[in-house]
Length: 498
Ligand SMILES: *Cc1c(COP(=O)(O)O)cnc(C)c1O
Image (tube, protein in one colour):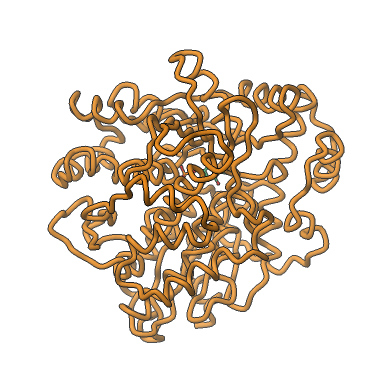
């Protein structure tokens, strides 16, 4: 299988080139030239397999330049039992009726980013051996919380890699900050910056593209790469759990092989839901993909009207990982849906960077609407949804998952389409204890420290606290550096000991 670029469809690269490089030279994103097709028999035959074997069945079709030994090494390492708090890795839990929750947060950092970032370091080091002759890969990450920790945990002590994470000094939750500043590993470093997430993100991008810095790294036999969701290596692991969830529903007797399901995804950068779209195109019987947004509802408006417009107020919500106004992976959907038309993608993307908006043709948005539905949920609805799901069904969900549950409930009310449904759950409620506890208590926030908040939520809900979060209480803080955004490149050299 070969990959091309959304902005130049004459490009052809292998999977390992796409993964090692991260982004195409002219700024486009790598996409498969053609998708593998899974027959119903093939899907059904995966039902009896473990998550690891299901993952190999799907990934084998995409990573055609990996040997079977390399695939084994990557997948067995990423989803090793001791790293996940569920032996199913990504279990499906029935809440009531046809509403099923796919729990994607049983990994080491308790957010769904682990599903991809546990595998990416393996894919990247194998890819680099094939394409980048033994260079040390330096991963630079700007994070608003979940990606940074998941990337640190994924890359810690991985041979021939170093990882540096920058986070906005006042822009992450107390739990997220502690997760990062206590990070273990010989090849990791973490630094706060005076500024917001966008500042960190732009500074990282300018370091990435600075030829002088690149040359200095090359002298030391190092190269930069990216661990965020524009990298194909982060998207492809996410296709697996849609197949896995379908097999689990068959196994649980909730559907018969061949039955259609709906999928609902709490969305930010459009990576997770795009993986669901790829699964559908590969033959998984998915009827609708429902895109759920919080108050930053730029995607809801786009999917309803065909106009994408980021010129709007930015809201800091209780579901911060979805506080995004530029959903980068939408570019991949536009490419596929426009009939692999890189000219259209180029026009839309330059309009987005120039005017902050674009409008697609009526034919294109109609085609997209055949596959996708959309809705959003404000802060009050998030709280009500957390509370009513717990009171009515004894299911405790985090703020991001609550956005999806609310949008799903409204989707059923509006359409009457109540076929068996999988709702992605993207974080443990204990990562956002304060917001979740406040919602359960009907709006009253107890004045407690972060860990007392965790204990209190545990008492009120009787839900288990994930071990990795509990253990943070006794961990030593290792990283206390704070720098100004202008000095980030110096910090990179200092942290790399150059
Ligand atoms: C990253 C993240 C999301 C958004 O996922 P995308 O792939 O960016 O759409 C949703 N919820 C949580 C908890 C996340 O960490």
